[in-house]
Image 1 (cartoon, rainbow, N blue to C red):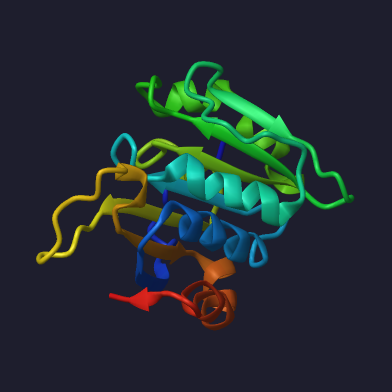
Image 2 (image 1 turned 180 degrees about the vertical axis):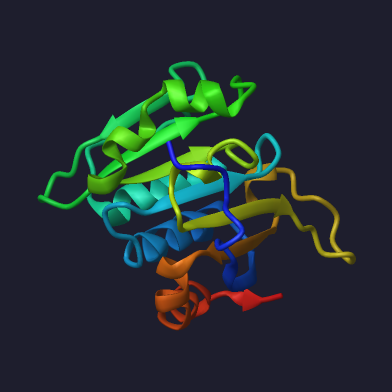
Length: 186
């Protein structure tokens, strides 16, 4: 496992967008998959029901992996192999983990170089797996003049995407343009 985020790891890209529906959250995941490559780490944060797994379902679709992609809360980690020779999707959930040592025990870094690794609830625990990573935070963002929708999955969400390290400094302009292209930037 890499050391915790080092002094040299710096924020290199940032976007915040509004995602109105669960279908558009999946679409965001598909677009994000087009920017990811083997070795990429995504640390995904948000409250219960925010849309984290929905975003990862879109990633799985975009990466062309064997599914279905479901929440790994009770199994802690799942590997979804590629159906087309691309990178596998390693989907982990750190909700029940209490320390970086427990994340290290999962050996996620063993597959990191040849997979796209996504860790839900990973903030403060998983950043040390790689020198560069994407930090994505999803929060409910109902509009001030709207009542919450009856189907909470279609309440608008605010998605904050922050790139950390050299990998995202090099890819920042194209990645952020692709990710925010069809969304309302906040």
